[in-house]
Length: 471
Image 1 (cartoon, one colour):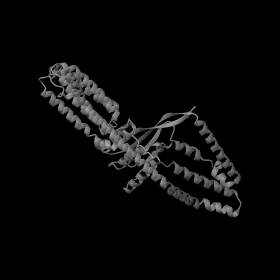
Image 2 (cartoon, rainbow, N blue to C red):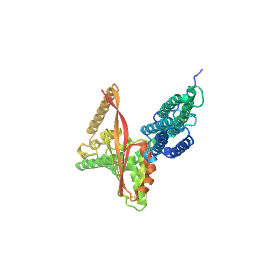
Image 3 (spheres, rainbow, N blue to C red):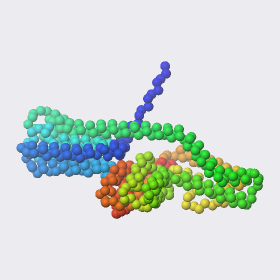
Image 4 (cartoon, rainbow, N blue to C red):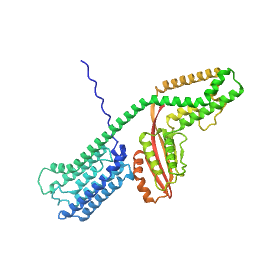
């Protein structure tokens, strides 16, 4: 019998992921849940307090309980605002702590005179606050906060059990009180876990499909690149080589011409390699602004090509923000500046480009150009081949020694600054850019917005983790 091939398990999202983190656009659609829950919590607290005036012995504690719960609801609404994304752990802890404080104050206001546990507003309000965290926080964090809150509520009910009007085992009161908190908590955790896993699986499948399509198109793209290079060479280089081969002799003018052609080819190749997705984006926006009858002057300052280290989500967020700025009413087409710098090493492909074409800041010297030397003499071509073989051997030795060393992860921070002049009132500008800023805050860290009319400055950071070998 042949053993059936096992079905590969679908990947699960990291435990620290949330819907807002994985799908910032979906997080925008989920944020109205916060104000709805806040209204329900505050309304129920006020109505329940008014209807239980005969049980309240300390009105100051009762008023303080309602006030603290209102503050917790206000913090929830404020924390869930799209322009303040992402919803941090500290905000969630503050909301739950305020809910617990309201519960303790409400219990103190009716101490020894509370008739039933079921009509207490604080446990239900606390459970609803935890339910509102579902789109914004990971499911494990919701479970921890909800379990701790339910434990505190159960202990409070257990202590109050001798003074309740119904005589039943104290543990039953604790279970009833804890259920009011645990039920919404479990619902929120289940929602967060299921939605996050679904989004992560969809993104994983989409990336696999894109990767497969890219592999299919790689051969076609390679052939197109080769044809384009041949066309470029056919204009100047190939006729020159054909003329040299036909004459079978080299003159001083030929050597000078070869050096000039080699330098031109090298310059074109370096320029094309240095072109990043950010340059392509700015070029498209220049074309769109020109089509609208404007004279754009959009500047990209990324000397170390750090934009190549951005992942797909970061590229999409930056691209959407730049496109939104360029299409705003009152945008000054001569004011857009995008600058990227940072601490730590640049992306790996920058090192490869530097090794292949030299440092961009250095002035090229035609006399040492390996392409020119290869054209001039066969002996120097052989020397260049030996040099390349030696470099490959050194790389293999380095890789062999590096495999015996342990790896350590170092964090590199890239700082992106976008400046643009926008002649719009501050309110209209904030309203137009609010969705894009919320996505930026969910994808990047430390997003800062500075506005000095008409100049708008956005500064945010992207973290990259690099693995280095250490002895």
